[in-house]
Image (cartoon, rainbow, N blue to C red; front, side):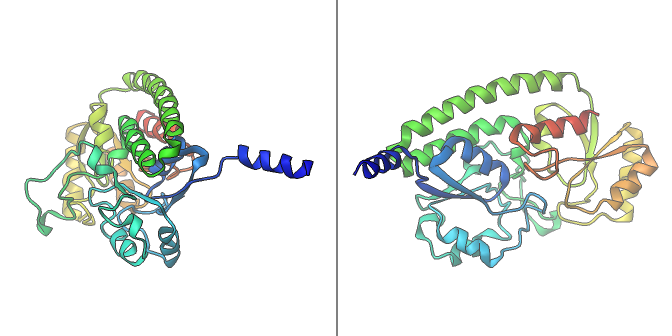
Amino acid sequence: MRKIILLTCLLSSMVFASLNVDTTYSTMGTVTKKIGGDLVNVTVLGSPKYDPHFIVPKPSLLAKLHRADLLIMNGGGLELGWLPPLIRSANNAKIQNGAKGFLDMSHFVHMIDVPSSVSRGFGDVHAQGNPHYSTDPYVIPVMAKAIEAKLAELDPENSLVYKENLDKFLTEWSSYLKTFDAKMAMCKDKNVVQYHELFNYFLKRYEYKSFGNIEPLPGISPSSKHTIELINTMKKNSVKIILQDVYHEKKTAKFIADKTGAKVSVIPHDEKAVKDADTLKNFYNTIADRICQ
């Protein structure tokens, strides 16, 4: 009898995960875990090693979506090529667009680079603006607040825990941003080019100037003519840094670097996209270190 009482007390003191949460990308997954703690099981659907526009819609993802209580997506059209068919096929009313368990993070972010018009002639542009906002470390508190509100809505019994976790995380992140900003203040006046416009939010936050992209248009492979024009632009403006992402081909960036004397820096677009970016803070530290070196 005593053993039964002790077991009952032990079980009553244990915290069991209340919610199954799927996020489309790693950075959102980490923020969700920071806020949800032991009350959430977090699954990241898209590997940070691959192009976030084109995650392979494997059947295994259907099983994950089928059991989810909450789906958190980046939005802004970033998942348009792979997520909608999976949501429709998951047979889970909780996470359908507009349902209580569906959270589009782009609705909480001020999107930049919003096109005045959309046409295939402009390449693979996003009508709502540039969706790669998570490269700005100041977006993290915005994410955290939106996630906390949604978790509290779905699991009101644990709302105080989510709020405590949020307050603790925001305090920690505020301290980190002060240190990070001081570091960035020592790394000014960088002229860069990118392969794809992945880092516009970071560049805007820290006032770097981009002189073009290796892609002539979003989603369009570089042509010889465009590459030569970009080389001339870089020489004219003393651009010495090429921001190369992990998933596009690297041959063109190397060719341009050889012609201009620029350095190719492989920059992560998401947490865990490169080895050094193994935590949320290290994700941003790696961006800064590789731009500032």
